[in-house]
Image (cartoon, rainbow, N blue to C red; front, top):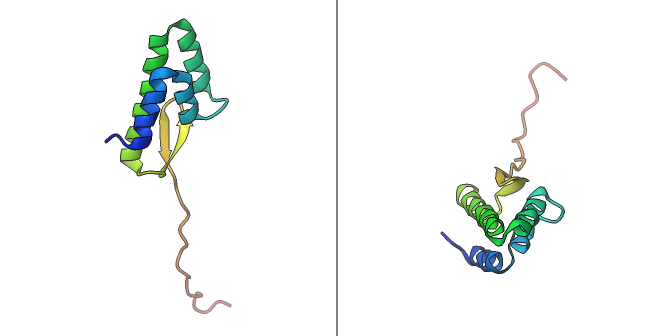
Length: 96
C-alpha cells in the first residue's frame, strides 16, 4: 500500500532521482553514487534505480512495520532488534 511519504518520494524521483536516493539511503552512500552515475548515463536508468529503492523501502515497511527496519545498503533492509528486559531470576538454591 502506498503511503503519503512513499507518494512524495515517487514525485521527487520523477523530477530528480538522486534526491530520492538521498532521502532513502542517506548522504555519502553507495546507492547515491550509483544513482548519480546512472543519471549521468541517462535519466531512465537513474529513474529505474530510484523507483527500485522506493519499492524495496515499501516492501520493508510491509514486512517489518513502520520504523521496524534499518537500511543496510544496496536495497537490503534488516529488522530492528530491541533488547527486552529479562525477568529477574531467583537466586540459585544453596549458593550464596
